[in-house]
Amino acid sequence: MYFINKALEYIFLPSCGVCGKLGEGYLCIECGKRLEKYVINKRNKLLLDFESSAPKSFFNSDLQNCNKIKSEAIYKFHIFKYEDLIRTLIIQYKFNDKSYLYKTFCEFIVKNKKSFDFIKSYDIIVPVPIHQKRMKQRGYNQSELIAKDLAKIAQIKCYTNILIKTKNNEPQSTLSGKLRKENTKNVYKLINEEKINNKKVLLFDDIYTTGSTALACLHELNKANVKQVGILTLAKD
Image (cartoon, rainbow, N blue to C red; front, side, top):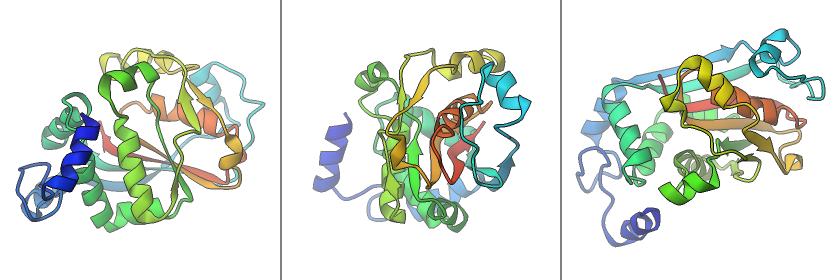
């Protein structure tokens, strides 16, 4: 379905992913205003010290072999509140074969100065990976599509071969907070770490709920000698 949607982009004029209106790109002016109602646009410090007891209790593992992140703080940036129209669009995007909606989300993010400036402050964007089995079922990684487009426009690199998902675990959306933490342990693996050494790395995911997925990925990214890491999510639940 993803490749069909890509082919259709070259045949037909872009249409608004929300209402279908032609001629105003992938997000029309009116629908752009509708999405504005759900904007958070807030950058927060992630209170996480990889030398403290907090991540050790979270992962229940020894992090002594991890290098210390050089940045003074880890920042997370959420664009939307995960509710109403945003929730509907993201569910359609992920589960109803509407891969074309990545263009709509990207158009909004790029036009939003706060979010786009946050992206441009990094060297590399790394999307949260999905397992190969789920990729075959869905046909695309929803975070990867957005991350690639954002990287191209912001003129930074997007690496999809830094983190891999080694286990096809249960979908996080079906689990409670406590089970989500357990569900993300030993699921992600860092590879090709030399590509991100001494770089500012931005992790991108679609939804941030308990932070379990993001923390599991940061745990792996921290094994490289990264200069700084951050988290960007489309929506905060």
